[in-house]
Length: 575
Image (cartoon, rainbow, N blue to C red):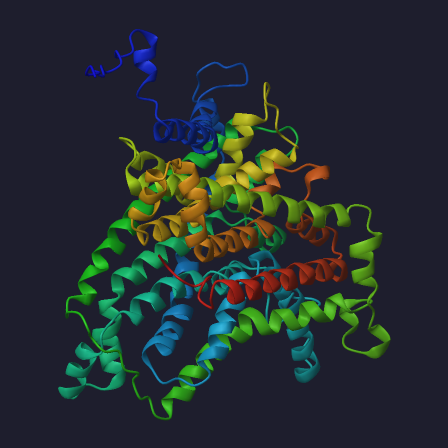
């Protein structure tokens, strides 16, 4: 028998040689890179480009002159910065004691307070603002009416239509962001250092002030920066509370630029300093958070014991209960009363009780039904697209399939530093004009929402990918399966709990998103949050309370599903 010699196939030449390196992982990278350019890079580039060109396409700085040429516009910018600082400080005052009480002490009622923080977390800030309008409006607010009836004085004790009222409401619904970070950091601190302070004769309060809180101070500072960024980018609460008091901020001024005629060039120029400040503060926050590593230098195996506060534990609980009462219980009581009333100002009585507000909103209003459907559909596709996209990105980044794969991860978290209102301006500038002309379509709503909440989904997906060893998908490859098969049949099932949690968080966020949607919607694409804002402008508090209550109840239902499927910490965990 003659020997058979197998010769290697000749190497491809010409164009075939260029196509050879394009294996599936590289093709997937190019595809995802194109998607990220569409969702992140191009809208940001358009903000810069549009701000430097007039309507005819000529290079100019005139847009900046118009944006900052009036004292009122500069005052709006100053108001936003001051709002961010004040809301940050007040949020820290709310969140840090509660975090310390839950994580480090024997405070009673921990589950109640924890559920209350969840309630404040899922309560849309604009709904909280509406609740406090009904409570502390200077003329008809229930707190002022009770004060007048008890004191006989014809004055308003509270006025929510003030700068301090705006700060109060923004802080009430921003403090859970601080709680997420600070509570997680406090749970990692060993009790050994606190025990050392106690042995040296320090009181519990001295230990907390001089040992525990300084240990997590970098985390507190980083969380405060996040609250600042959140406060300056809010639209709903400043529009509802600030506009009647003639207190303008950056977001409400940008909304003016989008009134007829739309001045997108001036809006882009006006948003640039906000974007720059946001990027700088995010980099500062990242640097500060990274320095928190020293808190665990006591070694592994440190035990965490609850401090015994004695009678003071009830004072700590009372403080936590007070914050939850102001943020969740009191506003919800008045919203429920308004939703079930023929006229909310007539108070609690059987004669004033009705379900007609719900019937009108859900079945009789000409556009309310479509609005609910829009919110559900936009949120569903946003969550699905965001989770799918970020799972693929996290896979490529974690497995380092191609050079520069980390660029995709960077782009996936970039929207975190972009205020929603600035992102909306970018999408309008990029995709409202021809040839795509997406303005007024459901697609631009879904794409902008996906970009807005992509960092949340990516953080969950990346955290899950780090917990999986590559040998699992390598077994699929050995058996002839592709990488996509490994993702679909191995990785996704193993990460289903983490991905389900990310999907629910994105879905909940999209249902209540207002800052981005308010710039991109038309009548046919209006969402529940926009309709609530429109109803508040019309003064129809009974109807908007009914619709808002539907939104809150639906959100809490999804939170309950998350607790059941993913676990009780799926909304307040930090990766």
